[in-house]
Length: 86
Image (cartoon, rainbow, N blue to C red):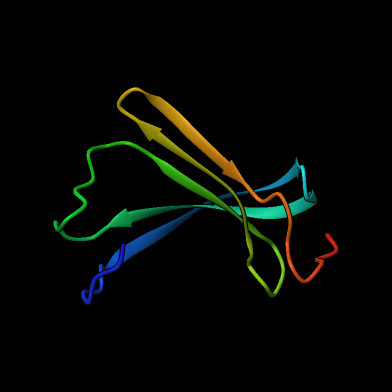
């Protein structure tokens, strides 16, 4: 979202997991962000989960969001410069 406003949110750490996606195999921390106040995006009980690498970079490699009509999954296909999974 391209606005001049900051949107306060909380992050809940759910678990550690290992994921294999097209760009490699990654040890990850799974987090779920929550909006702390109403604004443009109002939380309606749907989930957004983000898989971040469990290293110093905390690079997002997988994202899954539940919508009213199903879900959307996005994953890292390629990192540039080349990133070697630990």
